[in-house]
Image (cartoon, rainbow, N blue to C red; front, side, top):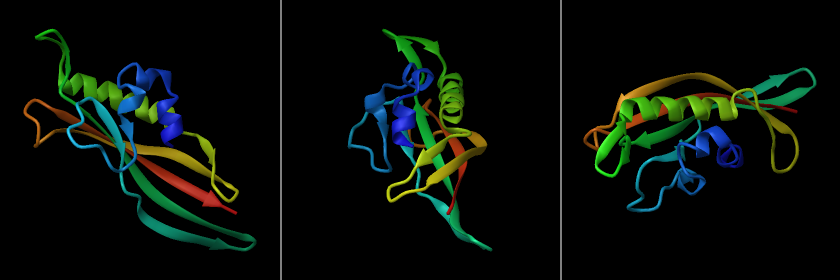
Length: 135
């Protein structure tokens, strides 16, 4: 998923590819940034002649807005909304190869836009995806 995010022109127009991370973000990283969430709700899929798994993963984006010098040219809320849209477009409907064979299908399931409690004036977008692998 990171390769897809870092290769998305609309997303890297908003967040540099060097600011798109797995679950761990380096200390003192400036915003905007995007990071992967921890997969949750992992469940097995079993049926006649098939095996697989399904999980939910969130991708998070953080921003304090866009400034030109000291002038705010885009609010954090608007910028986070655009980052979230770009994340959703970068991953929704993708089929990606898995290590060891097979593919995973990714489907966007919704989002949330939150004021960030840690950063004054900061906003946080959460984009949720269902990931499904069948073999």
